[in-house]
Image (cartoon, rainbow, N blue to C red; front, side):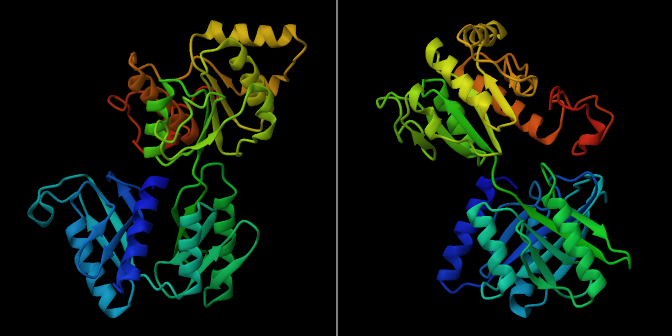
Amino acid sequence: MNAAETRALLTALTAALSRGQGAALATVVGVRGSAYRREGTRMLVLDDGAQVCMLSGGCLEAEVVEVALEVIRSGVPALAHYDLSEDATWGLGIGCGGSVDVRVERVDPGDPVTAGWLAALGEGRAAALAVPLTGEGRVLVLPGGEVVGGLPEEPLHTFAVEAARTRLSMREPRAVTLAAPDGTPIFIDVNVPPPGLVIYGAGHDAVPLAAQAHALGYDLHVIDPRPAYLTPGRFPGATLHSLSPEELGRFTPGERAHLIVMNHHLDRDRVCLAHALRSGAEYVGVLGPRSRAEDLLRALEAEGTAFTPEQLARLRSPIGLRLGAEAPEEVALSILAELMAWRRGYDGGFLSGHPGRIHDADTHARFPGG
């Protein structure tokens, strides 16, 4: 789930709990074959049957709601299996060709593990939640080494904690179900801070890029020295930084940030590119033709500013996937499509005709330079 989906779910949950409503979280914990969403997708179900977010394209939700209502009443977690490969699943004739396991658990905000997990989700902090799919107990693992909760058997607890720590150490961790040495399936749910997007330049074409990035849940920052351009009305949901080129040192991008230089002003772009390449960000992009980035680098070199091969390897220009984009909204879509492919390790090509699985990055070519 992206940060925008998580934000919507938590907002609804907070409101429901304040009204005294019961609630359950349904989480996809296993997928075999084709399915609409992957492990770690969550749906909130309230005691009146209302739901927030979706686990599929609409084929599972009604059944999951029924399970969730019983879980809310009983307090006993449930693990439900749905075979989508049947010709007529519940009379709907879905035929997706796969199966999905969904774990449903009542939300108890007073439970330390639940409270810690919800806090990590709400604050965008890294955390991993390990849950045996058979048996009892849960354990929350935080990057600093803190462990909340536990599993009743020590070998299983140790395995779960180490598996959670391994997932947290990955560049782009995903939820997964693993088999412990004794065969117990352990679901590892993972939350990481949302990816960041730093836009150098608040021009007109930055507006749709920022809007689409905000809708996808990016931690969004826009930098520009012009107060008439840098306004909350133009960039809702963004953190705005009114900085001149000489003041860029006051801003430090986050380690998960993608930086895009698009001032449409050679002097500002030159200084912003130097600032971006000196940062620790793994992705630095320059809008426009390749020759523009080359001109900026030559200008920086002429004034005595040099970069290491490692820094230059992080520079991408032109940016965006080859979609034939022309209008600013189309260019924004092209850029964000590249960022997603680059971050998740896909090549950004067509799915039609691809022999591998849709969601398995190992069957796709690695994104060039990623």
